[in-house]
Image 1 (cartoon, rainbow, N blue to C red):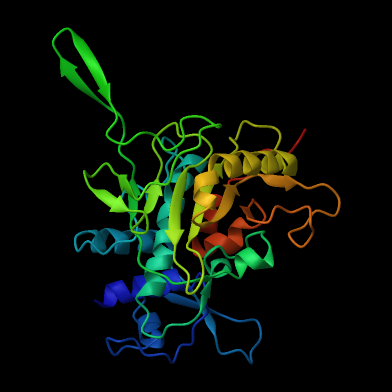
Image 2 (image 1 turned 30 degrees about the vertical axis):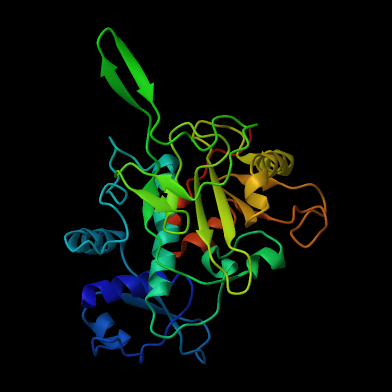
Length: 319
């Protein structure tokens, strides 16, 4: 139980700082955990501030995660947290595989806290560029597991092979306009309600990489659709234009018309590139799309917290 609590503390530290004197449900304080070498604290530069930040070496995080896998309490599958090597370096695609689990970890850690506080979308996507209206959207949080949409499979018949879709791809092409699905069929053979998970789209899905639905008290459920946009090491242009992001946003708005009539649709792009903004373009300006949330290279450190070094894979600068 104490291992799970340490893990939850580490995840929660992405959102809030803590005090050493706080006692855990198991009877140990944060200070006891530090003395035992399970977690480490970094004090604020201001000596008058009692809060500290939790840190945990990556090798210790992986060992703790692997220990909890046997209890079905881990936040990440084993293959997502791995030790890089010269023959198997860390790539941005590996970070892309981690992002849905990072969001799930934050939601799960908050949901189990005994003292509930108001949580905003900006509390989860810390550091993101978005309007105050989007970042200030109040959420009613539940623990959400990561699920993968069912892939196409082949059914063999004599003399021919029939391709069968148990779950049609959410968006086969940019101009598709899918109807709202009440359930989503996943690779584990189960159909899940829209509100019961973070759903990673099938391979080759257009526009969107994963989606989740977050309930809100006295407000529409927020439907959050996320695209992960990366740049390879060999790319010489490390920037993405704001115009291309807006173009993607408009395509998604059109494709998700049926969802917009039922949910508060927010579109999020996470990228390791820097954004080439036109002069005067900020989330507070009218030129910023109303329901757009962006995390670029400059915001990744705030979003990722202790895992920031894994996402900040800088591409070569323009030459």
